[in-house]
Length: 149
Image (cartoon, rainbow, N blue to C red):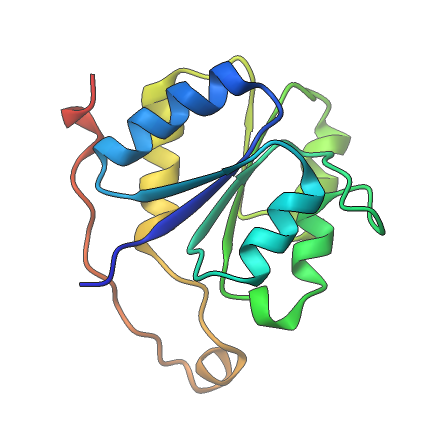
């Protein structure tokens, strides 16, 4: 089974360190970026299954990494988990309409973040052809997040 790669795009180094340890405990390969521009370049040039990102990380041309990633056709299969301190329903609605697959609000318990990340990393976004035909491929499950302390 190929190793699933997660990109953490989070400006807070302390959170990146904590989240990285938890995600690696699930058997995921983790890369990090502290800003939107480097995160977008990283997902464009590697096989990333999941992007975990703060909502508004500018990429240069775009004020939101989620939207910038969704504008790249080659990144349509990447799952996106937004973790942000923005609590308004409008922010959640906007993020999901921009292409996020899940939205969590900080502060977040590590166990909750790992549960959602594991679910997203274990699944994949079906291609347009699969959606039209109704066929998708299953993926192997990851290790349980309960093993992470």
